View 1 (cartoon, rainbow, N blue to C red):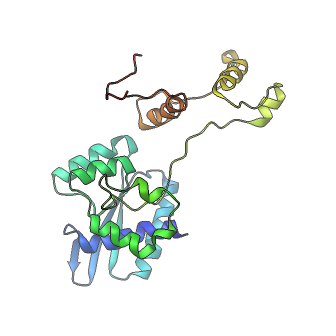
View 2: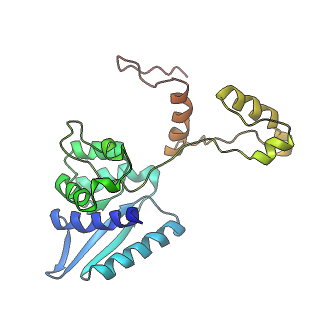
Length: 224
């Protein structure tokens, strides 16, 4: 429950501190909230949260600005150059650091939200991730987390007489044994398009096998 409130509270505080907020008159404020939830189902949930927020805060109107994930960072750059960035933006913690270096983050607004909510309301370690490099401020208010993993069907494994994989080699063995392209059945499915999801999915395999993209000298180690 508290996480849904954080997004909307952030919208309120950011608007009061950022000069780009759109004021129709002294008592009415319009806020744009940019996010990557382009699916109708997710937008419907956000709409309900916005409706509740607007009811609790008369005079404040929140407009959704959904943007496809793969075009998100480019959109941020384009809007920042034209001075049209929305007052509140959902972004990854790593890109928030980039925005902070470009002085696009209102650190005081973020600090005010976290202070009002209470640092104890966040999971351990989450606030550390969104700290600036010098540790003096936060680059954003944590509202969600992305979890990557390998999901498999126990019933399919049991039917094939296979044990659940406990390491990468066992996973490969299981995938090969279940693979049956002739009948349109495949041992494992992975994204291959040029997208953020593909990079995220590859990273968990690489890092879990100690395959870092860069070495200690900062040079790229991939050769394929």
